[in-house]
Length: 227
Image 1 (cartoon, rainbow, N blue to C red):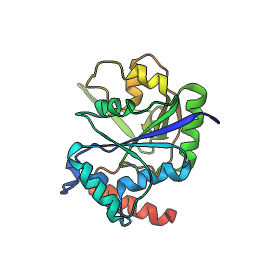
Image 2 (cartoon, rainbow, N blue to C red):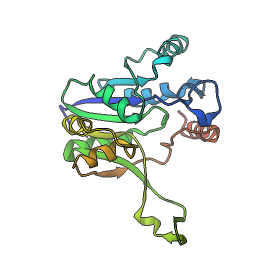
Image 3 (cartoon, helix red, strand yellow):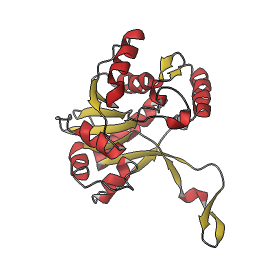
Image 4 (tube, rainbow, N blue to C red):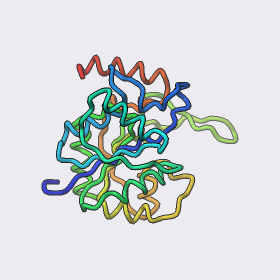
């Protein structure tokens, strides 16, 4: 990984309807600071030479700039306009990446990714070309089928997180494909293009904030981690 250029694309294009709030979830305050700022800071504190690209909805670009001024948030980053789907948002963002190397794609509403997870993701991607963080399923799960529900072996399943890290040339080939509705994360896009997916250990605190309850949990985790 040494000597390889590193870029992080932080996707913050969601509307946050499930939050039932006036502004999208990435702008809500967590520990007194907008969630998105925490996500950006995770990467900057890990490697302050890393290039940061933040994808935002067009209608919230000025709002974000006001938030940065209000919170004196000076971490350098490039803003790009998001698309109609995550796929199109990432494709738009990739057009701004000009240096070969490793590219991480991260949810702007995951403010608690650990440095250890970042180490594992970038190291695996440098070696194998792809790296997807995940955690084991800790609860019993069942599959619902036409003839009813059935238990499945939870040890065979993993919960997928971000950042998902790839070599740039792999991402560019993958995102040259036509959009498909099943492209819900970058690993699916890359796998569809014919590249194998490597899993690495994530961190359990790396939750995705999608509901008001998630925000409460994140607050508690930040206090516990003394962040």
